[in-house]
Image (tube, rainbow, N blue to C red; front, side, top):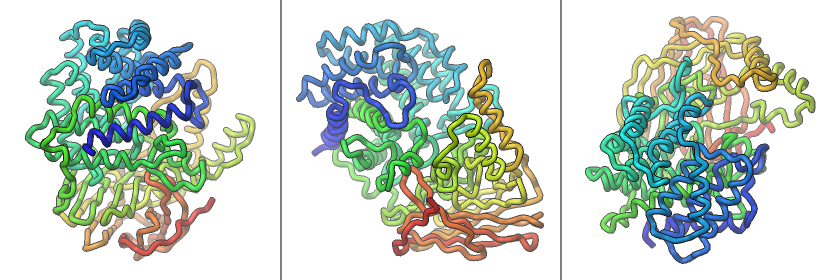
Length: 615
């Protein structure tokens, strides 16, 4: 079968699983407390159903399905903005241009388009949402909605949209998702949302070709290409990492790139072929939907809950990913001469790729691939952006070290299984936990391969990159350390303040808060990483004012890996749950006896051993 047929068949199986599981009922998600219509599941379900019909034409009921999902969703107060308005507009545009006739689908689309806000971007700008969502709304206001309604796209609107894209673009052509305006937060570059913003630029170019859209898309996707994994995956850390949502966006973007970037068409085709195979190996639920990440061997529902982001849902991510992948297949079918393109030779010779903007380095060769984070972002309040650390390490197709875990067994979410019933009692318990443990999302010991110097309530973490040298099998870097008030009264104050802002009338939720931190010159950290024949060796040196301080260093790994430490003593072992699955996290320590501490960490493919767990 060709790639197009395989992709359509896979997406069809997911859509048919949704039809069988929910029938004429709205799709519900476990753990969702609010109205499921607040999600964008149904509108993307309708878009996916329409595209599946146009690509296959064997099931006329798919047009009825698209209509029924939109009518089911269009009840009561529903948000005709952001994701939903984008999906509605795309469904209308694709349907209009297809020449198909279906009175019911035409009727509900006309009703939804008439009720879609005409200029919601001004409201969106002030809301607590990432720049990916804001740009999505700008694209709807200026390009998608006018085209869907048969109106002209204005030069003023196009200029505004391209200016906003450039406003949040990095020097290398990526995009940052936060902040938008008026905060001291560091710029956050989630790979999935970079793909989302490239998707928006690509959609706008396809619907209304313009050189500015071409340049935005080409520059960004060309920067992405060398940082893809062998499997064609870009989102291996951070928000929604390793999710079908990210995979669907990646497939669309790589198919589009193979059309727009003629000078590198074969590279994009090969990468896309890998990405499609990767997507089609996502673990499924018992009914045939895609899991919200690649954690395939969870022993309980709790483990799955710990591993996913709070907004990642099975139905939503499954059907949205189908919509994006099918749209790429519909607009950008595989050309005949490259239909059988193989990724077998991709990244088989030694290569180096690095991004200063993302703080990521990729070293790869015939039988290995190592992704390293060289930067660190503290004010994102997400441990997956702390560094420097190993993001991903693979040998001969075997993943030894996976994505940084969302939750570990010592986190508050995992240890507090039975919480007090009253709100005040829960708040008091949270304050006690914060005083003792701090905020786990800023705890460097839960990341892996990241040194933490600890003294009382203060942690010292590597932060500012001072120098970086990279060769095919070696990386050397040096950092200025940051002093972080990690435990004690300050985290309690943050906990209490956020509790008040969430629960007292008249107070708005606090969206950005900056930890108490400062750069210091009294401690310096240097790291050398060597890739040997079938192993990775880390050599760390910490020097300076270490009197009375303790060095803590953790490692995370899958059972197939062997990790050995020299120069540190083991303190404890924990389980951790992330998008790649269950990993072991081991914590090591050393009391600083002088002005310098040295240690080594060796990672290699080893014999299988069971993961430890404190649950």
